[in-house]
Amino acid sequence: MRKTIYIRTLFIMICILFIFAFFSICIGRFSSNPVDVYHAILGKLGLEPTADEGMEVVLFSIRIPRVFASMMIGAMLSLSGAVYQGVFRNPLVSPDILGVSAGASVGAASAIMIGLGIWERQGFAFLFGLLAVGLSTTISKLMRNHSNLMLVLSGIIVGGFLNSLLAIMKFVADEQTELATIVFWQMGSFAEIDMQEVVAIGPVLFLGSVLLIGLSWRINILSFGEVEAKIVGMNTKQIRGISIACASLLTASAVSICGTIGWIGLVIPHLARLAVGSDHVKMIPVSALLGAMFMLFVDTVARALLTVEIPLSILTGIIGAPCFAWLLYKQRATVS
Image 1: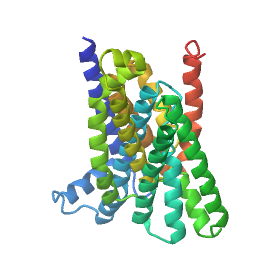
Image 2: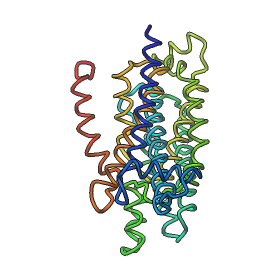
Image 3: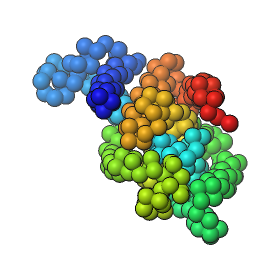
Image 4: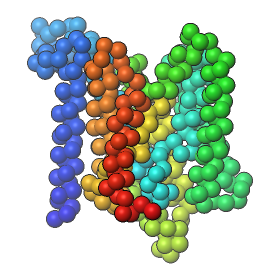
């Protein structure tokens, strides 16, 4: 019975996500009429010869890639957060705990100061994000301590160092051009997203999601503790390494495309845990769907609320901080 309810819940969430995506495509300054959107889609498919060509351009060059990107990025960040919190057995862990976001920011800032384009900027952000994870894991190995706490502390060291490098870059950057671009990128935006970028992160999302969902029952065992996992014969080092690598790859891919977006990987897994419990087999897919919904909602508000586009991290902070405070209040009996 419980499995049937869970499957029904997933189906309802997917339906709501697609309905919300359609209405998000309709919202904008060009037209907010769902009928116009419907005819434009038919026109693109060759079924409506009298469709508005201008509307087609807006939909398929700007809005549809942006809607897909927001759903994918939200799913990637929340999925990473759920995995990190399970592997580290800490509900306060977020996807950038190993310095991924700081590394990606340094990479993007380096590309901006060199004068490279958007594709090179994303490549630099992705590589520096993975480099940060590599440094964090290397430091913990050099300490000859493979505990979760040492890995987190290594991430704090790497993140602090990279944030200092980023501050130096801001200090020497040109105020009129480079500095403004770096700051705006750090605040997160889908303004320059196109379908090629959506396709580029698609395989990462698919492979990462399949692997992590497949490992979800093992993450359940890891969350019980190191001793309990070894008792049942699990190779904890291998499972933890694969899980952290997949989650870090998802985070680095997301940050390289849209910049730094906070709170999603921290708050959304808590909401999923409240909805379906702590079983990662159920919680990880629900977390990904909730993250996609939340990011789609935030991006729709960001581009439609004012005449100028609001950076995403501003809205996620405004919404996420009170939401997290409410979650802590709900779980105050278990927090000590």
